[in-house]
Length: 512
Image (cartoon, rainbow, N blue to C red; front, side, top):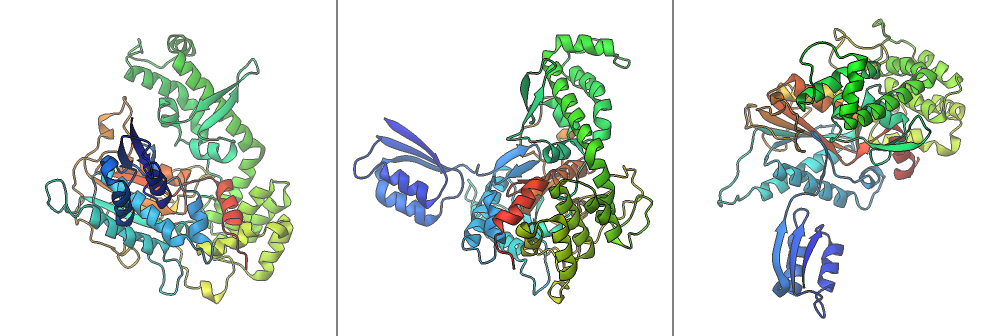
């Protein structure tokens, strides 16, 4: 009997493989497929022990998860602990593994991008992005040293930006009010499964993924717009599927009912999203709305009228005095500290006591290990916040004024406006954005419009330490606004606010 081995190129996997053939082979022959690049020492070890049994040995470059059309992850939640825990013993190995995963993504997309990274000050310990950029660039050069025609592959029209979680500590902590981000923040969704109740009291599970066209069209909308858009989107999707009989006119409730009878799949999708939207609105009206104004004022540094916040404590106090959940109070305290670029030890201790987390102060203190100023000490003077774009002319909701920093970075990168001193090249990028047609990390939907198959260059953004749903949304928004460039965003893992707080107290285990 022959055997197919599909495995990661690790010492443990290779040793297990060798054990299958020594001293007596279990199989007549082996067909080996590695998820990514196999180091020479492991390859030589296999060759030495099992060469005569191996019929095929290939590297197939799939050591990443294409989560959405423009989102990928390394599925490595432990990376947060490995990278940011002081004196971590496996930081270098973790960065090495992540670099290999990024290279397999580039290989899958057939891109050889120029690599850039966010540079911090000379005395900053935040050099993880720099280290990762160097590893990725070296591995890309090696991977593309020779192509199938034994010719060296040149750089493609793509950029790879590597950023650190410290670039924007605000976005993953805020209460975000777009549909997807809000859902994963406030509702217990596990493995993209949302549980909802039917009218008869029975429970059903909905899978929120790329196969649900209605979810895909709604997920980046503000919660205030979701329910009003559902009938319109159902009509639009049905037209794309050639299921709609009426060519013109607004869809009526009666027409919608008939449509649902003919399309049971839509009826299920509508039930799911309406139930989810109602659940989220209940959370918003009960608790979140009160938090959002204070959070937005602290994050933006100005109120809804554009007046600068002179005393952030006045924004924070109502949150602390209200019987909010402890986690919500911790989030507000962090936003307060971020707004000041660090606070005094005396003030910090008072805040910790007020929230009653003396035994769990790591929720706040451990952020310093990410390079985020918590205490306003001289050692933190070198930390400089990313300059923000003025978006005051943009129409938005008062409770949703904050824009993730990553969106500014994406826009500047697409327009070739990133400062080289802040974003140095690990290797040179192409001077012009005029590459071949961009192809997403996932297959497009059957109903994709011609705009979805955009031509132009590609920007790949990798966030070390986790990416939030609001930051994922930015990749789609910038792509939509710039038809000449597709933006893909990826990270070690996907963050929710509660998940990030858990990382900060459990994964980074040293409080000083």
